[in-house]
Length: 289
Image (tube, rainbow, N blue to C red; front, side, top):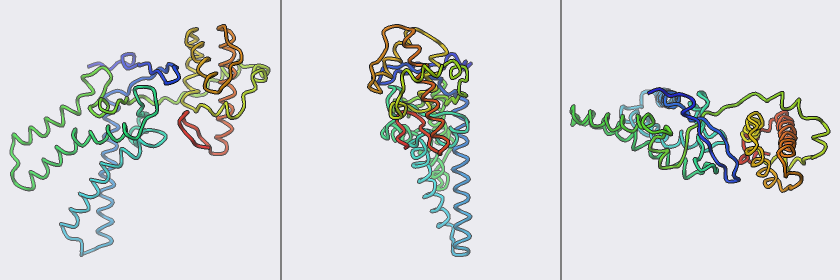
């Protein structure tokens, strides 16, 4: 199955009515991210085992070592994914390396309930069948058909993203989420250069108005300005005016374009000044001061 980038492009409508163009993460990228995360979890378990051996020396019995592995594996698989995806980047270490992040399909904020649901489903998809097979092997009642059933169960769920249009695993279907490419384009110098100083002075946005959005939304605004679609320009200008509580200007496409260019330039400068002091606002939901 060819996974062309154009087939992975989607439009996400925010609660304010703005349209964002996103690209779904490819099946290969998602599998790679999971492999990296699994390797990190395994390395952590090995490190904990060596630490226990160093601390307990000869008093560490086989049963105690097994308990460390079982407890460590339980904590890692239940909290590793949830804690990382609950952060501002909405991504585990594997997803960050491969430039992926989790977003809500309805365009709203990614909630704790959605994160918990998509990751608890991973227990049913992968970990419970594999743990059952391992236990069956140690207890001595494993057989070929039971092994085939366990791996077949896991394979069905793991291959699910290959057989649906939105590359969703069962956890994404349940939680209403997408895994998308986390693009971080370079600041568009041409847009900044084209914005005259008098244009900024004309609107004189306040710091509070500029802080309404973060890097994610400002980068999407740059995309919209580059595409220069009249309907999109008008829609986004209206959304920003309502968001920041200003209703000056508007009424024609040229005015809306000038308004967005001024807001983009002022917001970029505002974000860059904050970065000098180590303050980063990733998106409009980020409450970082």
